Length: 187
Image (tube, rainbow, N blue to C red; front, side):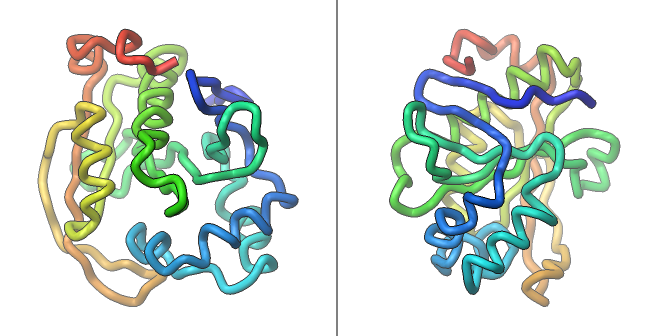
């Protein structure tokens, strides 16, 4: 799949992660309210963050979320193969944003941009999204972006060595178009 290098929205620039983002990533990802809510441990150092950039965040279809006109990363978003057994073969959107940027609508804006990319140039027919049952912020993002609840199950969270209830959602290209697609400010 060919992903664009950058994606622009009204307020955001989604761009590839770079190793020089390690200090900014660490400043946000060391917060214990961020990673554990998404299923990964808080970062322990800038070196740990640099390793995560090299091994996880450099994956195709993964972007640093930045504010237009300011190159500093404030969060992350990207496509990955869904972990849902039901949605096997489809892509899932994963995201997080640093606590200083909560409540500004940045992640819904970024999710809408990935929906526009997925249902536009990438030609996807369905996109998935998920959150842990107690992650209410993520739940709000998913609902704002028009995903439909599909099912809940309990799964292992390998990086945290625990099990959690996961809620899965999906949206089809047709649902997205019926909801206004690009008219909702995706790009």
